[in-house]
Length: 376
Ligand SMILES: Cc1ncc(COP(=O)(O)O)c(C=O)c1O
Image 1 (cartoon, rainbow, N blue to C red):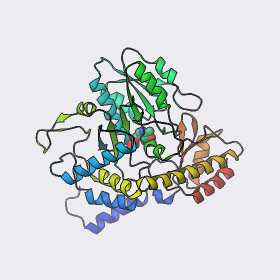
Image 2: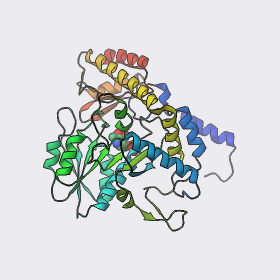
Image 3: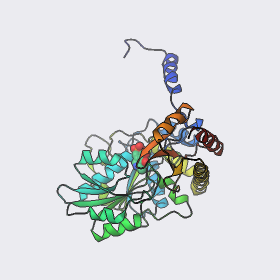
Image 4: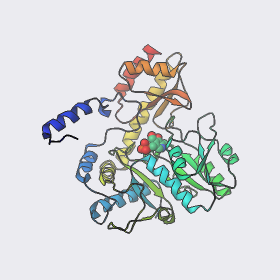
């Protein structure tokens, strides 16, 4: 830190310079991210609630009320009646907390949880912190988890199964209904990671069932800061039983509340306000239109890829992620990066991973296909 004060203008000049080097989702050449530009009203809501602290709700009853409205709205969207939840910093916190709640209510020594091989790396962090062992269930040819492969891993120490609704690498949706049967058969809890798919699947006409309408689903992750048009940080954890949330309670002697359930202590109300703004502004009608547009663009991209010699699809897009097979995906990705595209390569399958978020327009998809044809 400097010894003396610095002019405000100078401070901002330095920061603007740094910010110019960052991607802007508005540039729409970013096909590697599951985040997008927030709605203007969501950004404004973020600014309005930036100085609030949900970790001390007695001081910020307005922010606390907004948070409970977001949880109620998300619960309605995902067919959870009653239940509990809170606004998190994102999918990682939600997955960690879901596994923590599951561990806390399960009376098993050295607990194990069966996760699909496609599960996000946040589960590795959770397992490391919580002392839970992960068992990785195999995927089928369509990159969805194989329920009988998952069942084969169940033993006396297994406390839960995880399903992913919209995987990070391929956008595939695991067969939650079949995993639910396995969970019921073996008296296991079931967590659904819908960090990405939670704001996509409810707005698709022929989406598979994945949410609390399936009785065996106990907890769910869904992120407004991915397909929800909210600002970062904005995630959520929903739990069917209050008891699961209670198992996360920690006494908070010096605050206005007696206890808190969140992982972080001081936590901004900006994410909750932003999610509330986006959901209220768009409504189901708005999300449906946005999801239709993204899926339309993803399908155009997938069809175009199919026409490029040497390229193929790992699977037909289930959500707005396109997984492209190529001889050398890393080399192709590097060449695309040279032309100003941000793309990524998935590991399972090893393929070019293209996420068709709302900032990706039809025109962008066409330009991308031209470059792809040129480079492949
Ligand atoms: C399916 C899934 N779960 C969890 C996460 C982690 O979310 P976050 O990066 O918001 O912590 C991601 C991130 O992309 C994801 O795709």
